[in-house]
Structure formats: C-alpha cells, structure tokens
Image 1: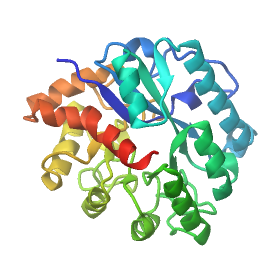
Image 2: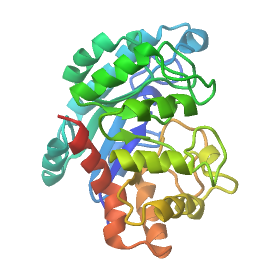
Image 3: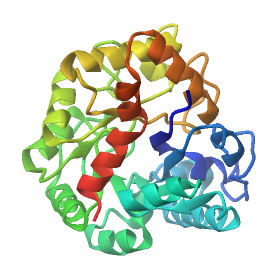
Length: 317
C-alpha cells in the first residue's frame, strides 16, 4: 500500500546551489536525497522546502547569508515553474489538497534561520506575502532573537516580538534548533500550535537537537506536531529503520493516537541518513517497517500526511 507523504523539513534548496552556493541544480532529477522523479513513486507528496541561512556563511563561503537566501528563494521558484505540471506552491492546507487531487506534489516554503533577512520582525509580513509559512528563529548560533541548541540562551525581547508577529500573520513557529531555554520561553507566549519540524526523542538519543519528553508533551498541548528526523546523528547508535521506529513508538507512549507526530526527514541537510533510508522514495520502505512494528494503517496515515496538513490548516491563513 502506498501512502502520501508530507515532510516538514528539507534543505534541498540549499543543496541545489552546489558546493560553491552559486550553481543551478535540477529538482526534476538529481543525485541528492530529493527529486521529483523519486517523489513520484509515493502515493502523494508535500514538502516543506527550507531557505537555510546562518551568519557562519560569511566564514564558510565569504558570501552574505542575505545573498544565499535570495539564491535559495530563486531556486525554489525557478524549479517549481520549470516543473509546474508535477509540483505547485502551496500557501494553505487547501492548496495541498487541491494539488494532491490533481496528481501534483506541493511545495511549502519555510525559513530555517533568520540571518537571511537581518532577524527583522518587520520583514515577516513581506515574507508571508511571498509565500513563507514556517520559520525557525535560529540555526546553531545565538542571534538577536534567541539562543540555539548549541549555545544556550533564551528568547530575547526582539525574539518575543518576532514570535508574536509570525503567529499573527499565520506562520508556523518551528522550535527544532532552539535552546531549551528559548523553547520554554516560546511555550510561555505562544498563541497557537508549535512545530518541531525535524527532531527526535532525547530519551532515546541524548543530543540537544532532540526533544525531552516534557517538550514533546508541551508541543502536543499546543496542538502542534513533531517531525521525525532521518539524520543518523539524531537517531542514535546503529541508526536504522527500526531505530527510527523506536522514536516513533516512544512518542506514541505519550500520544497513543499519534495525533502530534509527523515527518521531517532533514533530507539534503545531513551527511548520514538512517540505514535503509536513501532518499525521499524510502518513505515507502519506512511505512512498511512501521506497519510491521504494529502501527495501524489509519495511524500511519496521520503520521505521514494528516497531522502535518492539520497543523498547517490550524496555523496558516
């Protein structure tokens, strides 16, 4: 049985820029984790495409994160236009449903890090109008908005304004890269569902990028979702399809109906995937493994499709 897939995070836009961050890669077919040819083997497909930026890009490439952000955005827009019979932009959950009914994939534009637009809450409305529907305040660095999972540090006053404005507009707030302090600061002020687009269980893999049980429960209480991450470093020792299932089943101990668990593979954003997971097409093999571990088809459909669609519907106007 083939299940539609809604994945909450990938770095394919960044990867398509190549090692020089100025190349023109193809979404139709490539050697990355995601392309439309392999996605076409699924029973339906919606993908959140992140525009990733960090101030570290100045050191890495001697290129401004603002320039890289502009290139990523242009890449997404160009590739969707070139492949418009196969994929369309989605601004709402209803757009995703319409594309699905037409046999087309959906692209949802998201922001991973805020260096690409100067951390400025005043620019969020323009970004929303362009089509961005989810934002994480930082990557692995501390910035004027918040501390990260690698630095510590809470939400700043500017960060609070940023979260409030994002939620006012109808953008999902993503906490996957935040410090523990900033996570809980957001939980104190959130007015809607919160998303951890690509994080696993810290109980099973003790790294700061993963969520504690209390964090997972808090996200559930907001009506948000957590996307299972395929990066082996965040899955644990001997990371394979069974190990990622262990993370799923652990979350289900706290969320028995799996109403707050989704997918967020981190594809094209990591150098080592879970063994047995080679790219977007591998979601089919993962589905079979999840079913073999005793999860029912209705529950699997929620994890693979309905939960992400639902949180988008609740957040994005």
